[in-house]
Image (cartoon, rainbow, N blue to C red):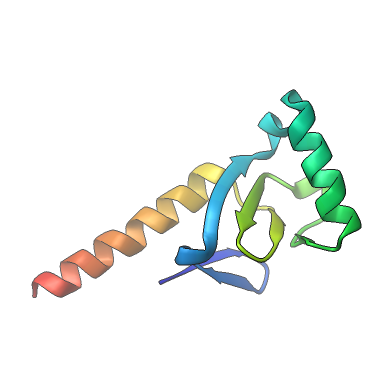
Length: 90
């Protein structure tokens, strides 16, 4: 299944490694270094303006900065699973 991250970006749920709240990113030095390297290497894909970034989505191919909160993305991912489970039971 796929998850809409905002804008025109949709990724496979199988490719998602982590969904992180932007507010939690500045706490760890290793995370800051990872993001700097990812940005320098061109792996960071910005879906929104810097002022609107709410979550970071780490996938097997890219790092996305999304205007959608990590909580909302989690709910979307769970709803997709429930919809599939309901459909399979019919």
